[in-house]
Length: 349
Image (cartoon, rainbow, N blue to C red):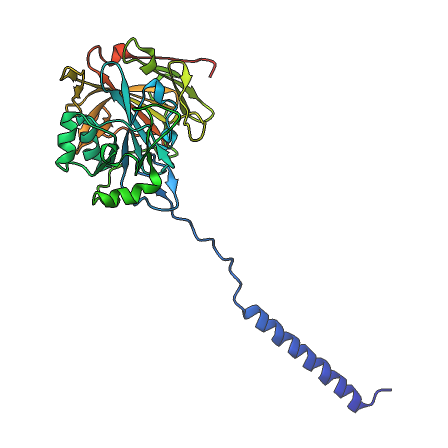
């Protein structure tokens, strides 16, 4: 049998153990709960001329290049990397491209062709570093006056501009973009993005399906089919695939088709100004315009706002573009936009 002293000792031990247990439990209860570490939100920035979101803010000024569109110059190099392509008449029924690069710079651009006065004016409005090979007399005066920062293949053929051996002149001059910084430095030009030009874009939750159905688009410059364009809308990617003279427009560097999210057509007054058939195009007065996006078409207007050619709604607000690449056609006011542009609805899509 337990003695009285033994019993007291056992009870004391039990009480002591219970007290320790309570103390430990109290300490656990008073500890701060561990909070899960929140992931840091990534800041994204819109690219000025595509509206796509990227992890780093764009700091390089736009690069604008005159690109040859003669059949002997196709397929062009770097054309699918352009944020915006302006297409317009040069001489006769032949069109040329002004390709704007900023969000993506390909390894080479071309074939490069000569400047025209309205090319230089567009470059000035965009505050772009302008690339050309050659010039009309008026464009030469504008470039030599310092109207825009530029590099020209007439002076740097064989250095910043390289000739392709598989094509003949004037369809074989290419600007090599690894020399871009050196070329800008050579002509004392900055590549810093200072004039903050940009387009206006739809937000993800906004309705883009405005206007009439337009799955197939044809833009005509005349009887020469080599310079007439067709666009086919792909609802899976919400982009248009471009073709000319029955051939899909591709990039020589990638072999991939050119796809754009927006097709714009601006009606402008054109005038032949010399015996060579060179033109003057009125890029200031504004006029009728068609905007195609996501298989739809609506009529808008274009205006020159601080030097930048901009699509504008009937209420005066800037027309919103679908994020992605854009192709802009300049069409002569005679015969006019209604006679030059046709579009149809592909019910199967």
